[in-house]
Image (cartoon, rainbow, N blue to C red; front, side, top):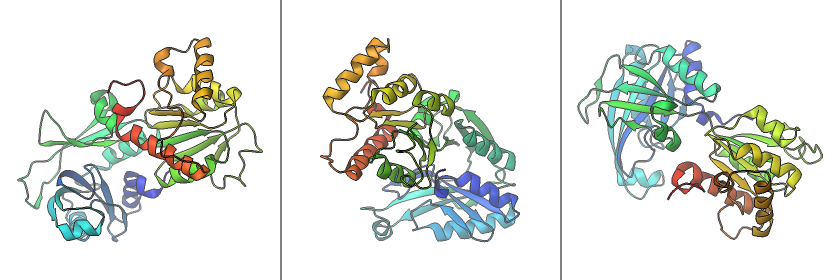
Length: 343
């Protein structure tokens, strides 16, 4: 099952544009203080005021929508700055206010369709891509900036930005904003056990494409996992077919070396940002010995998060799934915490 629509903003904006409804993308390009949404957050607006995404959690969306509709009509980009009051910030769950700057780009004029089409195609192919846009405007002004210059960047141009999923202004040129468009997040779960049921639901709600791998159809079936994508291959064959990239997490839940070990032999040398395995410390020690006998390099073995999940005292399947999701999130958002990396 694919990620929720709120994680498909570029795709939805392009669809609205191609349907002739008019569309604009609003992007948070700068924040100060306790801003409601991070730099890079996007909101798609159609010419009929359809919305997908968010740039502020709700406190300035109305003004952004109004400006976007004017921009779609005029065909020009807008740069807006907002101060988020303490009261508005509290309403969207923040302790205090801040300021945000939002770039609004109508598609087909300010944001050329081929640029957005390239972003959408790259995400579909699970290739990281960035759009670099030159923003020349006075701080705090609400202005038209005409036809912004766009340049497409690949992962090789700024790997640290892609790893951290961090949009922002270029250090070399403070007038150039780099919008990171990573592939959608993906979770591969090996083992259709009871913990996998709440984990798949939580991951999907968190924006992951979820794939459940288990050759045992008694465990992985539509009755136990309604709506999920099920793969009934052996894990090594399944992972070879899927490909594991820097936006993929792999979670092993079977306790069975016949299933877990082949998956580890594929996952550990890959770019997957998270590889977690269920089991006690004793179980993991035996797992490590088997991997050493299979000539797995020590540095790759050290990548395994085991016992899996943050230590929150979890007991039930849902609590264990919550602990796993928390650890996955930390590894994703704080790459320096990943096992085997220098702190």
